[in-house]
Image (cartoon, rainbow, N blue to C red; front, side, top):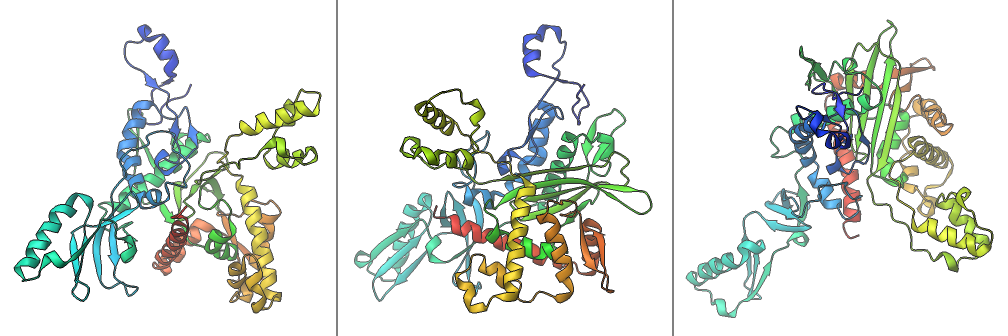
Length: 489
């Protein structure tokens, strides 16, 4: 019997309720398909049997909606390349706030609004070039006409012959300056909204993977009436790379991953020498916003390692004329697109071509990724790049793929080489035990010690609180490069 983790009522299927409505005195808790990563962030993983529709609606308004609005600056700029949302497509794009800087010194700026790929000033203004008699008015469409008359009256009062002016009205001014949109600036209660969203993802992923409510004590409070509520217990740990492998993997993901950016979740237990365990959930959104959620610092349940990974980009199949392909090459189509030929029941070549053509047309995009396979490919690139960095001449790198990755190894510390090679090789050989859970570090005596990632992050933050901010800026810059690169698509 499944129950809603918030109201603790038994979950009833909607169809059953509607077919037997007369047998219910009150409306029951209707089972609800819950997006683990919110739909507004283009999450595709949905779970049943953890939440009722009523509680889902409440959490959507109180946690999901405020959380997702924080990412509008990303989703709005990339909406043309992101996968379609399951529901709730809005006809009215959000208005984003930001600055437009005059030059690369970033000193002079004006406040702007960004909406549907157009940039307009918060407050209209004008520029008059007396050498060419050109008047340029900068304003959004709604205010442009009125502001134009205001400007002309102002200029007439100054004795300027407005009838001789060449007038241009610009309602989109992005090409005039350097654009910077707000992410955290001027957002009320940003940290609280941000933290609640990450914790909710972690809670619901853990519940879906079989963890009981009682096993989530650091994020979920169970009341005396057996209802539950999300709590803030300062359990969010920002990630920044400590392992030798991650220092190169995380800073080069834009260059080495074909499915960048991705969403990623890793639920895992960690053992300690005093026979205690902790339950953590690592979450990465858009390959950029990366945090651990401590779900239980005194976990007594079974050990667990569960993962989920997806791309957020549209997956489109090329328009291929199957009938124009030589029969001996059809196997390439079958292999590359994973067509299941065991379903083929025909007897002739013509039947086989008909079958392949039909199956190809019915192909559906798959957004969930094999996190092991993705990591293995990245580890392979890093290992190759490391080897080339030690042997290739710098002038030869301009013609080699991943040359920026290779160059990033130029200042690689010798004392980290063994740790990097061991971690990269372990991942390359299908060992997932270390990734984002623990890492190797030189103990100062030529030996490697295995350290807890989340625990060492806390220690490092206590020593240098600015390091996570610097890493956050680096990752946001990487995502911004991707956004800029894909604006014209």
